Length: 117
Length: 115
Image 1: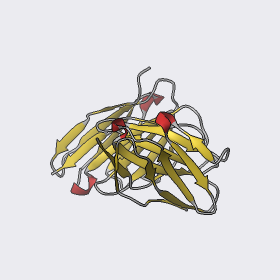
Image 2: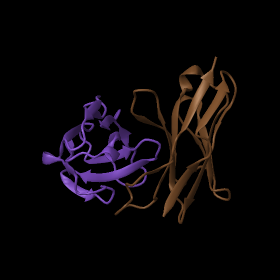
Image 3: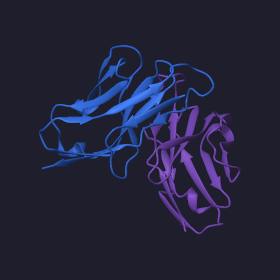
Image 4: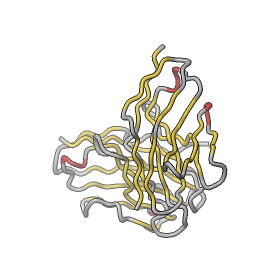
């Protein structure tokens, strides 16, 4: 079984300041981890993914996340927030194996990021 | 290249009526998935097609939901009869590759409101 907890339902930052969106996961194996973003009236877009390679993963638009197995965390960060970053972000876990159930993504509840000018 | 497209973007129906949602995956993607987000809850898996075959439908909530993918191209998700608790956003996604590294491409979702 696997689960994802996004620790903040809403985060507000000023433009130009760092962004930190927190995610903890629970899994009985080493999962694949993802961050997706949904801008208003848009589909879910993949930001970045961790699949057991480098623990520090770089994504699009300057975002990155670090996989910490000891803390079962996969927090999303960005050094400097931009107005266009305002969106809802989802931390997602997926089994690392192929076969039955491997396509069932488990989503966190989402974190809404507001960026104040 | 066109992304995953979903129709309608928003549907408002009364309890007991029928609604059919449609998803057109990215051309060439054999894998098609349906997910749902009920108000205030997480996005949850409903089912997975590989071409026209249902690979995994363990997330379908009950037999009021019927998904089809005739010919292995577009897919429909029918809710009949709709209940109040079916309200939410239904997402479709597609992928080309299998396995944990195959990226899922999501549509914008179809918002269903049942009154």
